[in-house]
Image 1: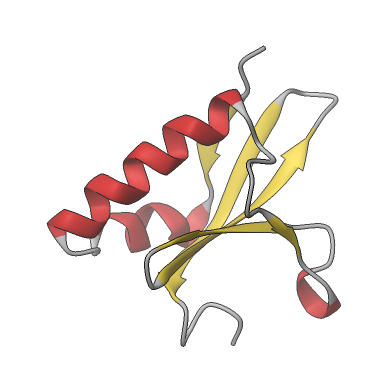
Image 2: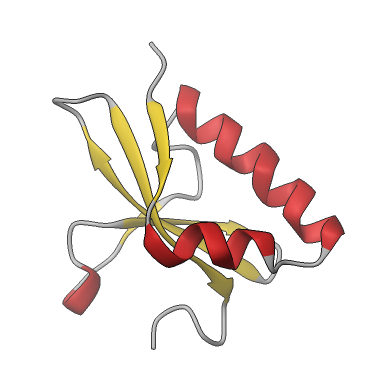
Length: 86
């Protein structure tokens, strides 16, 4: 079953500003999230980001919300690991 992918607010802008090589890797991971929103290595977040998940793409993190009812993955952040949780 395939999930619909939506890049929210600043996530689209963050994606466009990534270096080309990283953007390609992130794009592949985003495609994979449509098929499996909880891949190996996916972690649920806590604290302020409770209810969201993250996957690693090198030194970058993709933070997203899974809406099972709507079969949708909403990406909220795509940032370097040093900045993503701030």
